[in-house]
Image (cartoon, rainbow, N blue to C red):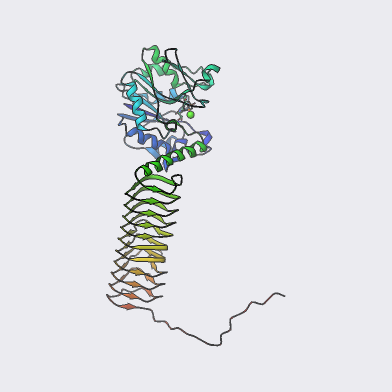
Length: 454
Ligand code: UD1
Ligand code: CA
């Protein structure tokens, strides 16, 4: 089967410089959703018809298995399919999809493909409460499809038909060239309508069949930001219900956003307003507090992620405690039972088994061993203005509060660093390290006082 995706339209009503099909739904361009669904059907040829913003569209979704046909002027859906013809295999049928209809399920498309078989013309139709704006399916007394009539060309009586053309069709390819070449644009919009091919097919003795989707939202297109927002909610509800079905506890399925893939073990609980992006994998018995953002992360079993924690490109082991207000940046790797608490930032660093940094700390470009206690206000000074350097800390080190570790620096095992120490030289195993300072106290000091304004 060939698949042609129409994506040449401008999408004026989006009021945006970005081509319509590149607007994101669940963090991915609309057109990419359609291409991904198309791929699951293993097409022999996959052709995207581009026009408005063609270069941007190519850049965004270009791939070895995707071919592009250019439609310079948008003269209608029939004309659009015509541009793809030279790239198609005439021996197999052609399925036509729309780059701005992102949520059609593969199972629905398979139903249409099966109904049409090798030689019939198939139209995906749906009965809607308000058919205004859509092409109507006109049937004869026996219930056979006679033609599709566009809203603007329809009679009063035809406009009352509730069965509409979703736009998604499958057609034999060998005869398609002749059919498309015979299309006329003597209609209300002055366009070459793909919908007129139905009558050509019937004239050639080709049977026209229809199939229906399981849900109406599968056929909804995006023409405005309102419709985009509505479909985003439909998609997020579907994702949330799939998670619930898989046994995940969601405090509120209306308040979770998944923009990518989220894989959860058993007995995972997710509080409200969490956002998951990229690929996120969560182990058994993990609890995620409210307002967390996780992007490309792996979270081990039994770990607790408390409120307002941000994780990106990081891995946490089992039974870790994170947050509230923790931030793991790319390359952060936490061993089992590690604790990273409020206002602690970890970047490109390993924190070993059971090590803890509970308050107000920056750990960057570091290798920290097991059972290390990093006191409040500790900073790894990893950047000299030009280069990044590593801090290496052995097992069982105690880092006193308000310590600065000026990298590159190595701290041996079991070292004790006194509070308020600036460490810029390596420290051997078991040593105590401190900066000598004196504490001075004086009596008789008088604090300045503000003069009261008279
Ligand atoms: C089309 C159908 C209508 C159906 C509706 C479903 C026709 C004539 N009408 O109408 O029966 O009910 O879809 O939404 O087919 N496109 C191009 N090049 C063009 C014209 C369109 O690539 O020259 C693309 C658009 O970018 C869009 C899709 O085709 O993705 C549909 O085009 P649009 O103009 O929105 O068709 P409708 O008038 O809505
Ligand atoms: Ca449309």
